[in-house]
Amino acid sequence: MVAVAETAAETTDRPGRLAEFWHYFRENRGAVFGLWVFVAFVLIAILADIIAPYDPTQQYRENLLQPPFWQEGGSWAFPLGTDAVGRDMLSRLLHGARYSFYVGIVVVVIAASGGILLGLIAGFAPKWLDTIIMRLMDIILAFPSLLLALVLVAILGPSLTNAMIAIAIVLQPHYVRLTRASVISERSKDYVTAAKVTGARLPRLMFITVLPNCLSPIIVQAALSFSTAILDAAALGFLGMGAQPPTPEWGTMLAEAREFILRAWWVVTFPGLAILITVLAINLMGDGLRDAFDPKLRRS
Amino acid sequence: MVHYILSRLLTFLPTFFGVTLISFSFIRLLPGDPIVVMAGERGITAERYKELQEQLGFDRPLITQYLEYLGGVLQGDLGQSFVTKRPVWDEFFALFPATLELSICAMIFAVALGLPAGVIAAVNRGKFFDRALMSTALVGYSMPIFWWALLLIIVVSGMLGLTPVSGRISLLYYFPNTTGFMLIDSLASGQKGAFASAVHHLVLPTIVLGTIPLAVIARQTRSAMLEVLSEDYIRTARAKGLSPYRINGVHALRNALIPVITVIGLSVGTLLAGAILTETIFSWPGIGKWMVDSIFRRDYPVVQGGLMLIAVMVMIVNLTVDVLYGLINPKIRKR
Image (cartoon, rainbow over all chains, first blue to last red; front, side, top):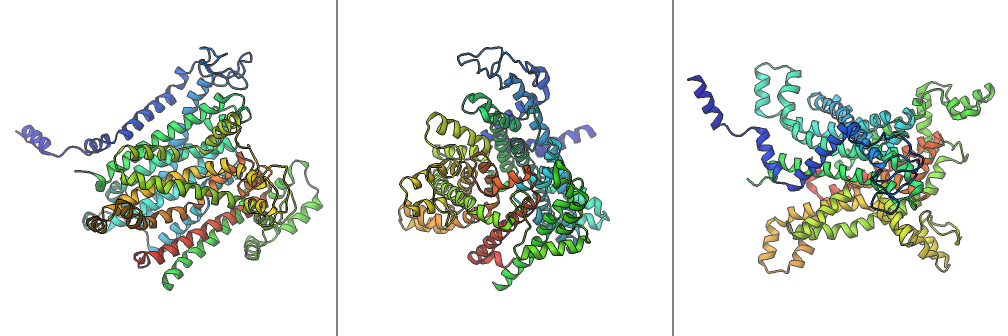
């Protein structure tokens, strides 16, 4: 008898939030395409060791600057050619996905967790603390992000880890602003008052009552800053302030390839194309996420 | 209105002090003794160390040092470059016109293409033109511009041989640097071909620096236009039988421009960040390249002063945009 009641409740219930989200997300073909490219990118990043034909730092000195297979002088042994010291381009590109994925994940996790925490505090705190936090964020935002990241890396020393820390610091104020704004609009709603009346204390109010209802803009921001992180890390690598050679990071590869731009187009073209495709896919996905989360844009 | 401007100024001041505090802390945050770091690999004698310590004021309490630094900033004294021994302030304003010229050209490029693209996309919502333009805009928005610069060099300079690869003007021309704007100076010099050479040198950097603002403006114009086109007064204009050109071009665009202008004003920071990469690639002698070079040369007073001046400039532009926005839109003032 109980079981019957339960199934009845389930069937009359509206579809789960995930299913509803997917329903709206699926309508945006670009976003779905972006999602598939992103999934492929993640798989490449995870499986780079298995699918890459060569070690990314192994130098084949007899095959310097060999063109891709479809050009004269190219061969299937190195499908996308080799770079100036005879390393296989394809293997380096596949391994590069790993670094970009790593950068994206680490930067978003640091920036989002720090930003959400500060934003929640600012949203719930007395006015003076709120003001201090927001003024601090204004100060960070006054600097052009890449310049601040560059200077931070100059202080910390050039490496991929320090580049990630610098980018996370630079991106974090956006999360603080976003979280604070949603917290303030949620805080005066009835369900929060109800929770307060039933005796929920501040930490519970912050993290369990309010936070889940502020998540959709934060998720969209996470997608967008994932791509910003990849772009900025590549830019820092390109300027010599990110991952150091011989790391097969895409921006660093471009920096090494610069002197060959008029002789060997493939060493310049492929790493940049890899960055562009990855960032484009994530931005497509981000646009789709935003539309799916925003009830105003839904055609119901 | 006065109240609004005052309240904006009140939030400006603490941010300004924060920015000076950050740039002040910069040299002191570097690992190791800053004076030893400055001296580099050659090392330093004890006497010279003492002398430098006094000169830079590192022997006094931190708060005194900061107040002295702040006093210097307000009087336009940012110390000297280690490399050129010239005042940082003078170097900055000698190089700034190059960056400004490039940024203005990039902005004109972005607005001239971005506005019409956004309007065409909005008017043809959901049709082929809209999709094509917005896909292109998204590609531009996702573009790693340092790679875009290299590609343009390969194709336009390398394969087609149409533009030079670096610098602001061909070495064949020489004339006094009166305004710092190469386009104006070359024209004023009256030398044959100088202006054309300056324009040639500007083409690729302008495209590279303008690409992301172009994409942002196109997207913003489209969404602002779509919002305005669904308003009642547009329906009224249609009912009156006005031509579509008049409706879209005059009635809708004028109102859609407000958010677009805000976006243009607020992209100064983006432009300066882009200038770092663009100037480095095209050897453009502006403040972006100057900052990157100084970081590599460990010319810390330059990095410190440049960082602060750039941030203060971005803040002033943002403040101006805010105030202008308040002037145009009374709703903002009341907040």
